[in-house]
Image (cartoon, rainbow, N blue to C red; front, side, top):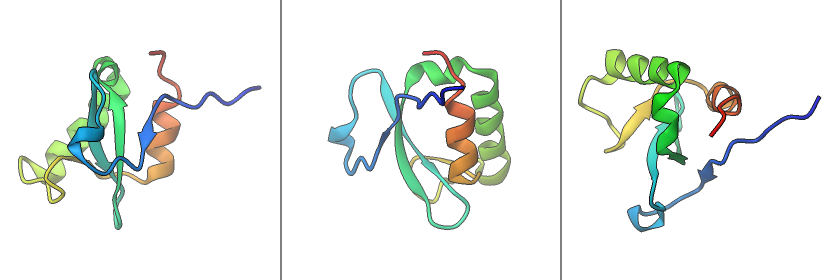
Length: 85
């Protein structure tokens, strides 16, 4: 069985690095990593669950200045790798 890697752009350093149709999220529980992901992820129910967790934990006060998703990086990648985009 092949493992499908999502079209996630990691290690984006500035807002200028975000291509059209994508947005940045910060993922992690301790040290956070920045991911640039397609807007199409917003329509995925499991991604909406992650956003719900972020809302419960951070409300509108995201410490990184952008959307922060409070789950381990490997879980985030595992969830998003299942998306058909």
